[in-house]
Length: 219
Image 1: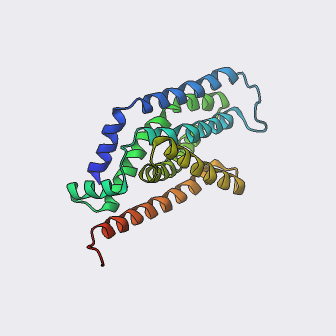
Image 2: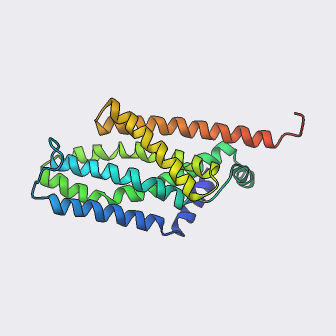
Image 3: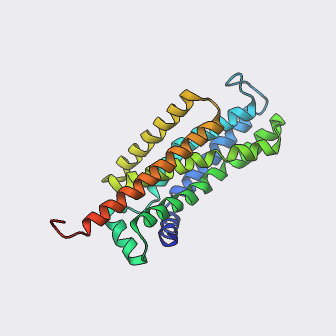
C-alpha cells in the first residue's frame, strides 16, 4: 500500500494542479474575509465565521475533484493489477494506496484555506476549539472525493470525463446530505460514510476483475 501511495504523491508533485488549486482556495477565501470583515451580512442568519466556513466547503467541493483527477496517474484496471504484482500486494491494497495518496494530496489544498478561517474565527469570536472541530468533517469530503476520483480515473477514457463524473457524484452526495441536514459536521460524516462505501466497493471490484483476468479461459 505504501508504494502506490508514494507513487501518487510523486506524480502529484510533477503537475501544476496542486499549487494552482491551493492558490485558488487561498486567494478566494482570503479575499472573501478581507472584503466582508466589516460584518456585512451576505447569508443571514449565518454569522461571519459560518459564511466563511460555507465558502470553504463550496470551494473545496468545486476545486478538489479537478485536482484529484488532474494530478493522479492515468492508470487503468489492468495496470493496477500489474502494479500490484510488481510491488507484491493485492489489487485491493494497490487501490487503497492510490486513495490514501489522493487523500494526502488533497489535504494540502484543504489546509490552504485555514488562514482565512482563522481570521474569520477571530473576527467572530468563535472558540479555536470549534475551528479545529470544524476541520474534521472536511476530511469526510476529502475521502469521498479521493474514492470517486480514483474510480473515475480508472474507468474513464480521458481526464475531462473523469473530472465530470467525479464532480457530479460529489455534488449528488452533498445535495443528498444537505437535504437531510444543514449541519456541515453531519454532512461531513455522511460524506465519510459514502466515501468509505465507495472505496470498499472499488477495492472489491478491482480485485475481482484482476483475479478474473488471471484465470485461464473456461474457468
